[in-house]
Image 1 (cartoon, helix red, strand yellow):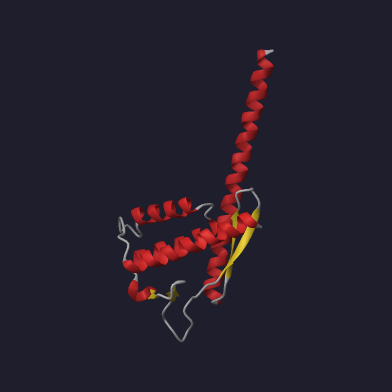
Image 2 (spheres, helix red, strand yellow):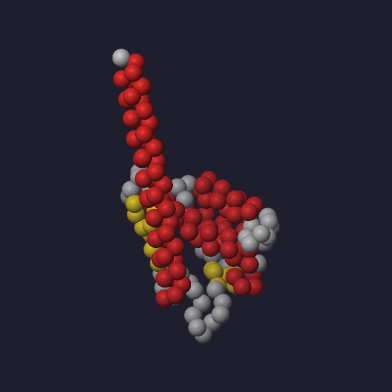
Length: 161
């Protein structure tokens, strides 16, 4: 009797492992799709779609505008909801621009404000290209605050509909 119970628990354990592997592979494939869509958005200077897994376990996507500089302008200007405009080339350091790129993706993928803030904190601690910790400039703080508001709004809309 105990042998059968052990066999069943091992089978369940193996099944759980397969589910974890399938889940990891799915997330890896979703990440690869997001990178491809982002690169195509950059090349075509158009919006791109980011695939997400919501808290219910269903896939959905968000279309993100890509304000890539056109050939006539070599600047990317970000304007917050409060009307503040920032030129990413002159107002942000290279490590801050890298962190901001990550946060643009997390804006659509974070399942909570806390997760978004944790991703920001992780990115600031790691830095970019061996830069070490990055200190937030006033511009980055304002942009990230605006992104947090957008995350909050997205989560509110997802919970209502």
